[in-house]
Image 1 (cartoon, rainbow, N blue to C red):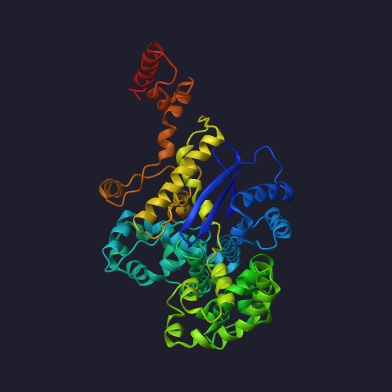
Image 2: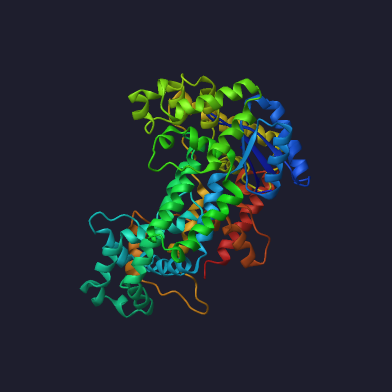
Length: 517
């Protein structure tokens, strides 16, 4: 797996990780700041890594969806025919959700829903009343998602329909001072609008299969390549069913899915994995029978197996697997087809087709997402936290290598499932849903009751760390003097004791001059 990113020092880095049955392991990070990242240059980097790992040990390459990475996949496949390339499935699904979110119906619905959540979360009186409702859960729950956050929030507000309508039609609200608020009248109109809730139901239904698929793809816990083709096939089918197969209604949504699927994600490895996954191959009612599925399987056979005689045996054995003959005829094999991981299922029940068994285990053991590369960013940021921190890249790479892989080893030693680190960057993705937009030439009105609720509530908002870090800078700018870096001051740096004392005195003078104010 490979993915590029930019660190706090504006260096262009590409992270390389290896995914296998034991989990994900960090290999190296390459600084590409001083090179042009075209297909040829990137291919040379990938070739170096392939030679180090061994081309026979690599089945699948997953990268970003950029055009240069796609060209790299073609060049690398030409040099090593046994290595297949595909874009990150999680990234493709996020882009699909992002495109759906731009549809006028969805964007207007999102704006209305955000008005409701902003009003709820910016009025402690209303929020306290709702939290007393039986079975109440928070409307907005931050999660490590990108465009999916919009649809998760819509689903959440849909689940709170009755609670919201109960409050806005209650005597408590009508007797409160918020009843005559202009914003309250707008929110009241939204909450009591039946079309708003019916549209929410439709949009949530459209996004639900895509989000469920995203959860399967965006994980390191188990191989996911065997579920990509079926997930996209069922997602389009579910969207059509929501609109009762009326083309003029479902077309705007399915065209987005189809465009991303055809241009980016439709690959031979996904078709072959779909055929070799017994959960789908033995489901005769829902199995897709398109010609491209068998074509993808044949392509993977000729790609991964160079011996012509073994290729012919694979073609002969596929009929044994599809017709449930030999070891596949056992009732236990059929019953376990949906409960076991597909690669494990082939290890246990695939002895009647030994050549396909080896091929199936190779294919079905693959991941379909480069999310492990993206999650590794947080490791870099915790080690390389300041622009003034001038760690050499090799030292930075070694620290991340040790940190990331020791964590993986600890998980394995404790016999735990691979757990993904928290995506801290996603916390600010919910501002659109809870933060009021500032109005020009207006000053906030202090509400004593809301202030008390904020101060003493366990659900109080977290401190803004960035504002705290910039406090010393703000003080210096108010005085017209150079800003003081408190962290460097406490660290001591290279300053002598006299400079240290003098700086403390300057800081005391700054605060003393503000005492009157």
